[in-house]
Length: 99
Image (cartoon, rainbow, N blue to C red; front, side, top):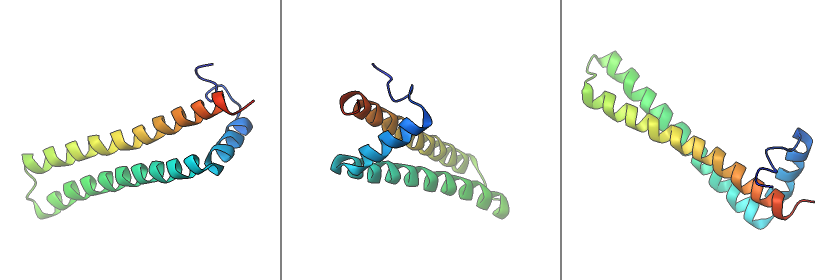
């Protein structure tokens, strides 16, 4: 049962999430997932700010583009990593603790 969580219905997924996030490990992981998502969102926002401020001041150069693109890539990696890790943790919980 490698992908038990992915094969659950919406109601079963909600129940699994509630049970997992009610545990002490689940509460800790929820904070970590939220932190990863916030870091990713702030990174994307700052990258967009760099590009917009460069256009407004007409001083955008290759270094600004490189920094904004690298920051955007890492931010997307943070967000997708948080989503993937959440799915893996919930899947492990579903396999071991659920019915």
